[in-house]
Amino acid sequence: MRHSSRLRVLFAVTVTAAAATYLYACSSSDPAPAIDDTPETGTPDPPNPDPPKPPADGGGGGDDAGDLDATAPKTCTVNPIIDGGAPREIARGQFLDGPHWVDALGGLVMSEFNTATIVRVGPDGGALTNVRAPFGNGQPIGNSALKDYLVTAAVQPSRLILTALPDAGDGGRVPILPDGGQAPNDLVISSSGNMYVTDPAYQAANPQRTSVLRVSPTGVTSLVQSFIAAGPLPLPRPNGIALSPDEKTLYVSITEPKRIIAYPVNADGSTGAGKDLVAAADLDLAPDGLAVDVGGNIYVAEAVAQGGGNPNRGVIEVFKPDGKKWGAIPIAGQRPTGLAFGADNKTLYVTTERNLLVLSVACEGIR
Image (cartoon, rainbow, N blue to C red; front, side):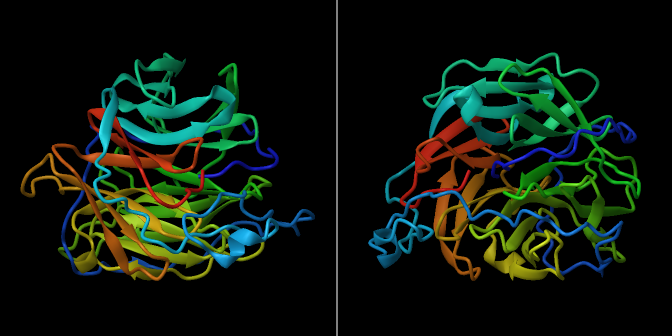
């Protein structure tokens, strides 16, 4: 997730959804579901006078020729997984999710779903401190940042919440899901201010469809794609979301039936038709949170599907931009939920249902 150079949307709009018990619902079913390829809707955005800015300088992990040119975007061509770099616990919480490094707070911000609070921890871990508690009416999940605001996807009722930084005051709400919002889960914000949001509808009662959405810098909400169930196949659940280093590709993990989709992103922030980048057969477990490094490698937090095998087994798998797998990092006894890079860009934070883990990687990440 990345920071934007400006903030344009501060509309006070709340979309409610029926309350339901939170489940980390996933399935290891392999058949591809039927998809309602609804194109983006809503009022077209006016031309953007400020073109998207290039990705922030991140650094590379290999001896790349591009690293010699200070003006060129940095990259990394080596395997980002460090042998023997097992994750270690640095903090504990009650169902942590939505990690995002916030410079203004000097630490990692997360949602503690079970206590309905947004919490912070320093780079080396320790006790969690409250950023916004009590959270109020609703429960936070995914987090990102937009200029001087933390943006949080919240449910019960469903909405996006803006929290002013660094004093954590209420910044208002942004409109979302004009087609009948259900339960937003995760989000990523481009350098031009486009917000991309997953809505797996986990907390909605008897959902008939799920979706991926875009909120433009002018506040227009549109569909990236909507999904419907087909016959005996489960309703697809879009979950994790991330952008490529050049912001020309949007990645979305589908927790069930498991796969990862890549969408081309146009210059105005709109998206084209998505294509499967990583198929079910190439994913060890059900995918959740995503992160990306300067080489375009995609990090995927995965856990055993509900009701399938060992309920406490997890893994972080890393894929190249073309979908080929670099390898995997086991997460023993844990179900990872989200991923984020820290201030040094080579520290990867992993939230789980019980704690916060940390590990080092060879390529610099994008925050």
